[in-house]
Amino acid sequence: MPIRQIRYYQYAIVMLVLAVLSAVFLPTLVGSSALMSTHIKNMTMTIFGVAAVMVVYMDDRMIKQALYQQKQLLVVTLWLPILGQTIWYFVVLWIYLTNATGHTVTTMTLPILFIGMALLLVSMGLLQKETLSIILNAPMKRTAHRLNVATMFLSLYALLFFGLTTNWIYGLTTMVSVLIITDANWPALWSGWHREQSLEKLATNGVNFKNARVIERLPQVTTIVTEKSGILTDNHITVHSILSLDKRYSDFDVLGIATGLLSMDEASALSKSILQYAESHGVFPSTASEPEIIEGAGVKGVILNERFAILSAAEVLAEGYNVDLNALETYKMLGNSVSYVVDSLQVIGVITFGDTLNKSLLSLDHFFTQRHLDVKIASGDTIGATMQLTNIMTSLDEVQSDLTPMAKKTQQEQWTSKDNTMFVTNQDNLPVEVDTITVAVNRPDINADIHVANVSDLEKLWATADRLIQIDKRMLSFASLPVIIFLLLAAGLGIFISPWLYVAPIFAVIIRCIMSYILRLRVKH
Image (cartoon, rainbow, N blue to C red; front, side, top):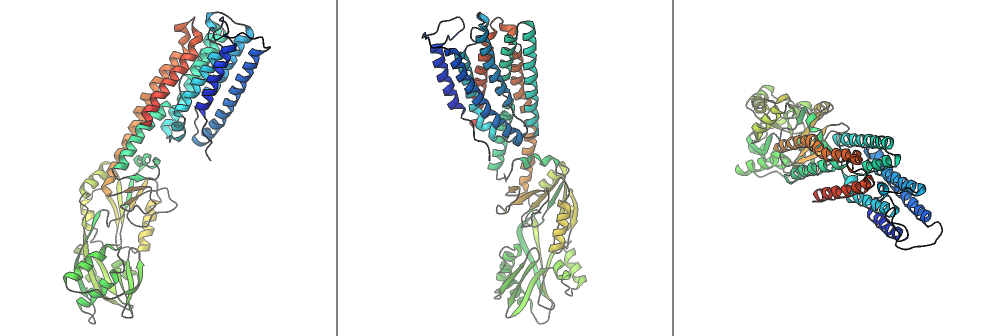
């Protein structure tokens, strides 16, 4: 279970209340007078004790969240403000214990510390939800890690430079300002906002996915394994002929049997077309019962107490029926898909039909070729039915035809077991236990990685993947630039504002609040 979000705003209010109370009993600025004089013994140390409790409590909450993020995301930016607010407290305590005076430490008092910590908590609360919910990819993690390292390096530089050249209070004060002025997650949030826009645009175009990270894997894809029917071809089937091959049955008898059987399999692409074909020939479907659907091969059923079936040519041959191979070869060469009508003993009829190619096939093939994607097809159709695709698609790398459902499944599993493969289907045959990207075409009911309305939407997927790569390259660099600038200014701030170095931490948290608020407005909208 994710750790609960820290209630930064509530703790910030507590800090502001403590700031007001401490300002009443303690000087707001070093060298000034308290608003209310009191003779309570150890008042200063008591308030410092309350401040210590708050700092330790906030550190504890933030450390727990940091450890959770470290485990889940492998990169954390909370360690820097934890270290910054803790050092800030000890610097102020050091000043009080040594009774340091002068304008250089004028604002290093408890009331100012409480105000500064309140602003720091507000800045983290502004982006806490977005920081915990953002999906960090590898470039985002690398950027955050590099900024963490840069912040730590510059903070140590500030400590050593000002500590050795001036004094260690100067060094620690500047170190605090470096640690708290920025958040290394800002570039990731900015980049993530642009990425989210691209993904939302994709969703409005009818492309949906389970996990946005699957889009990032598209540039590595080299092979497309796809179904033929309903993807590279449309769903319209034309029945060319239905012929009897048994003297016991007329052509109309075979048509009636075929129509009756297919009427039990409404999901079959052939069903609607053959019903229309029978109606145009004035033939009514026979009454069939006991349907047995053979996925990818046909349908079986009982008509007048006798078992009949419509099976693909490959399935008929696999089941050992006697088929006129010369006639079958002729059907294939004509570009037909072929199914046979059989009884329990022999072939009694043949159906030849064909489907038309997808209208977007040429542009799709051009897209595959440009992307250097090799297309592979395993089909139960005859070689004649796939001949058009072979002649048209230059991206077609391999076609296996005349396959039984089992042989087709085996071939697809062999292809999809290889790396960098995408499987495009409109059937219930998703590969299991393989790292293949699965795409369902017009099948929102199956559990694929990506769902598209049409196969042509694959172009939108790759276009979005290209945009995400550009966002990672350009947006992360662009958003990192202000962070680097602020860090450099904070690390060298004492050079420019000395001897007014004491205001550096307050300037830092104000800058952090302003930047966090601006970023929140952009991300939220």
